[in-house]
Image (tube, rainbow, N blue to C red):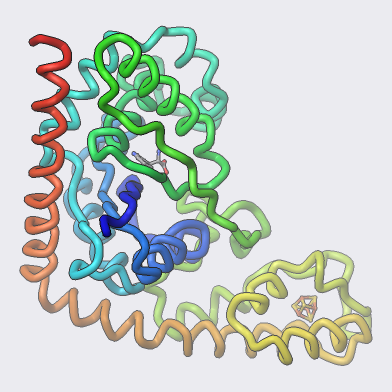
Length: 329
Ligand code: TRP
Ligand code: SF4
């Protein structure tokens, strides 16, 4: 039986944090381990260029670092195909061809485009590449004839565009591409230490690679229920980010106890955080062991990515053969 193909990518913009882990990566690992899917996961380094084209100094280092983070949290090259986008020129060729059939208004009305443009106002994003971001993403996905694309809700408009572009291609030329489904990730609401969205640029992130001491400091600095000013004030765990993290890292019984005790001011935030830091630290121990291993075996990581790239290239080439024939080009 052939397993259903799923494809997803991540931009290499620096070390991965717990928001990335629980927002996407953990789901990638689960999909991989379910055994039901043929998983293709790639480093979207060309996508990183769409906004960071002005500084490409660290992009290779980030790509390799990201691969190490992936391997450390359990992506397994024996089960998944792990690769680097920019090493497969066929993505660029399909991007070019799809750009011919993509109406500009589809791109201009993309909500993610407008949002990111205003969010990253310090950069000039009035570029062709940035507008065309979803076309490249569509190429990434359909070149592997993906059945599904695991993503967070923020990416839904992009997947919708991918579907429209694939339909349009099939309509003009030949039914080559399956229409991919978004596989929505159930994302727990984890915020950064300052209560804003966890993001590298806010300096509020807890990184996968943060060792116990750094981790402890960051957890101590986390915002809690803003109305719980003094130790004797009862707290509202449902409004506390520390509590959300307990939901992931602590046992059901502990979560219940903390919830109850917090409400009656039976536990103080300092203790609550100390417990959290310990739980995260335990969960990260095997991850850090693997990370240390890969940091000492960088060649092995390179080989893994090269091998995955080779496998993906075979698939991409086969599709492009069909595409060129369909276009009579
Ligand atoms: N746009 C995605 C993000 O920012 C990254 C990405 C690029 C991607 N190509 C993809 C995701 C293809 C899924 C499939 O997270
Ligand atoms: Fe948050 Fe824990 Fe403090 Fe309650 S006791 S407000 S859950 S940190």
